[in-house]
Amino acid sequence: MKARAFSYFRADTIDQALDAHARAGDDARFIAGGQSLVPALSLRLQAPRLLIDITHIAELRGVCREGDTLRIGALTRHCEMLTEPLIAAFAPLLRAAAPFVAHPAIRNRGTFGGSVALADPASEFPAMTLALDAEIEIAGPSGSRRLKADDFFIDLFETALQPGELITAVHVPLFRSNQRFAFDELARRRGDYALVGCGMLATQTGDRIDDIRISFFSVGNTPTRVKGAETALTGFSLDAARIAAAQAALDNDLAPPESDEVPPMMRLHLARVLLGRLLGRLGEGA
Ligand SMILES: Cc1cc2nc3c(=O)[nH]c(=O)nc-3n(C[C@H](O)[C@H](O)[C@H](O)COP(=O)(O)OP(=O)(O)OC[C@H]3O[C@@H](n4cnc5c(N)ncnc54)[C@H](O)[C@@H]3O)c2cc1C
Image (tube, rainbow, N blue to C red; front, side):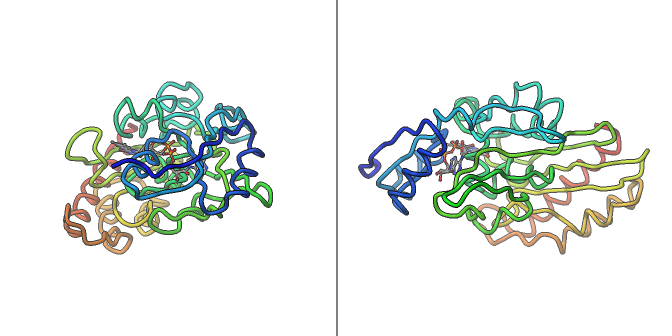
């Protein structure tokens, strides 16, 4: 199938992009890497009359330290998440997740901001913004704002972005020496969307977990923090009993939907297995 005819506008600044969107209203879409939007256009799942190309906007590029956070420009490509030294040093959880995002050809074009904006519940990066307690930097017709990732993902492919708003960057607290992270996913084949995936970031004093944020993907309509499991671990050293308590807490934390691919009980079982593995690695200092 071919996409419905559309007009194209190349924006060179954020203001130009916002103006173009304001003039076109609901019939416009920003396009970044195009790796999700172009297939959606081709399948006529989306049929906007105007595409606003944001890939030439310099303000959306680059990764830099800003105070105690790392500012990751929305146009940072998935492949750059693998190669950028600042990501490896200060956001290693994102570096760990990056090889699991799609295939090299898609990683060469797809963008971090596009992935977060799309909010696919099966995507790696949106879920990791939750584990990292990241903030989403947004520009829109009524000015700029920053929103905690915890408040950003609303429902299936639905975020707190208002019509015409653009993600300009994501701010991630800098990784510290008393922190540990772990990431993995279970998929039928490497590069496929995960059946279940999980990433976590723990702050520790010695062996004791002072704080832990654990986020799953492919388990529901949104990326999902598992607060019961987090509570079961906070203040304790990791041992088999603690890990079992965290796994048991998933029964309340997660409610996988019915799906043709994987029955909910199977997905919950996979989530427990994955959590156990990752906590085991965290305990070994992985
Ligand atoms: C075969 C295949 C396999 C894939 N596998 C995976 C996978 O395993 N894991 C995974 O996470 N993803 C996967 N993807 C999706 C891919 O990672 C996309 O690149 C990503 O989801 C969207 O990024 P993009 O830059 O391509 O966005 P686009 O396709 O350009 O845009 C996606 C949506 O986000 C909006 N948008 C884009 N940028 C912004 C912005 N800065 N502000 C506001 N709105 C914006 C667009 O308007 C559009 O609605 C796969 C895609 C394909 C085709």
